[in-house]
Image (cartoon, rainbow, N blue to C red; front, side):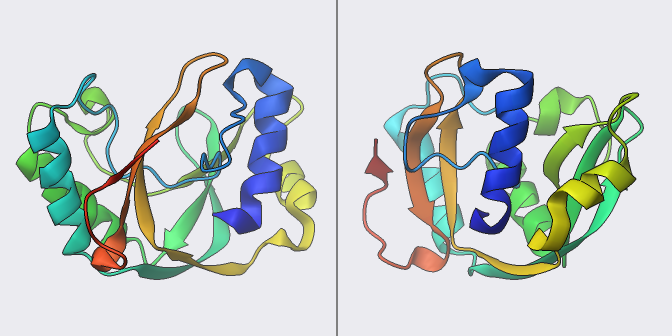
Length: 172
């Protein structure tokens, strides 16, 4: 989500610079469709993801509503959320061994993580820091298989939603 990348990247800089990626394809501001995924996916699994992603059209959505999860995570809620939820459901059906967030949360809530509530951080302060960045209309046009590791966060593979430019997934 390029519109909020600068904001989200600044929060990575604030909390843990080791997770800042130098990979130009890596997007710190993202909406997760399935995590964790297979630790070392075989080519057949990657082909399954490619087919599922190709069958889903790009998603046009808006980001304007800030919410907070019970654990204090402050996030932007995409509207509509159903296309993200449907993509997650299709991936989970194909990979039942990979429940979203390890099965910790019973409901899938599509979101773009912004910050963590604390004595210094609130929804109001986050909204103020965002300034005129939101509201914004975005288009999700790809799904990335991202790897998060200190000093090595990067995109491993990317697939276009709707199969635009389809072919084999691009490896990075």
